[in-house]
Length: 296
Image (cartoon, rainbow, N blue to C red; front, side, top):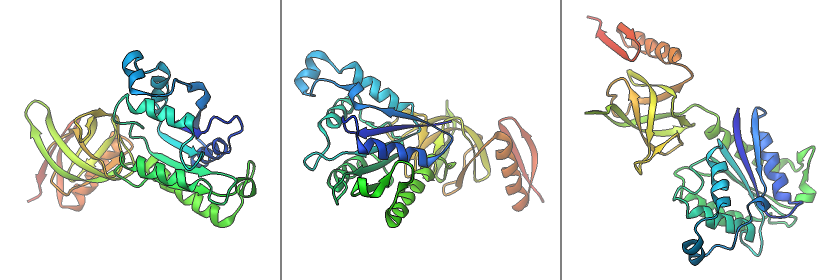
């Protein structure tokens, strides 16, 4: 079951942004566990460098970050106070940003905002989208709902037809990253002494996860390790992210397609069909080794 973390970026007990964020999360998939993070549960001293140096990072910041790291995707709906983040959200943001550089754990994000005004919190949404996008190499979907009380109903959802179409479009954008199997292409591949065959891949759609089975050109494998462009071991990779993959059964070719499949059997069957189509025969297909003999 997928796990979506919802953040209504307001401390209000009746937050309309929290309502919108939960509605969005439920719209993504029925087979989903929704974790609603209440900002009031993560109240901390106002961030300052002096406070960090003297007392360290509060445990609640680590708790908040841990919930993010365990998620498959994030839905954040931003309340706007004086054209910016609420104080409660900004303080949490400040604290988790000093834990490490990957603030949102590279999780797929949907950014939302709403208000009872005609702009629907657009100013803070644009601010957040610009800032969050610096940490992501693909377009973060975002949507603003104006005049919440007029355009939203808890049972029926978004009432305005045009606004609902725009909302459904960003839901699809997130689902494309969140649910679909990864596809991409090989940048380069080599045999590394000590680590074995390695493929450097760009993901163009979907999510690549550690343990996924894949086919690339005339090679296949299971992603034993994923290493990002910062040299960090990660569990997932998202669109436009260059990723180093260990677990391929030989060196692929630059430009080869990269496709994730559900099981080892599917990967091998898919590869078998490629051999058949290209005039190859399988000499052996055993565990982690495929030997190929061109038909003369």
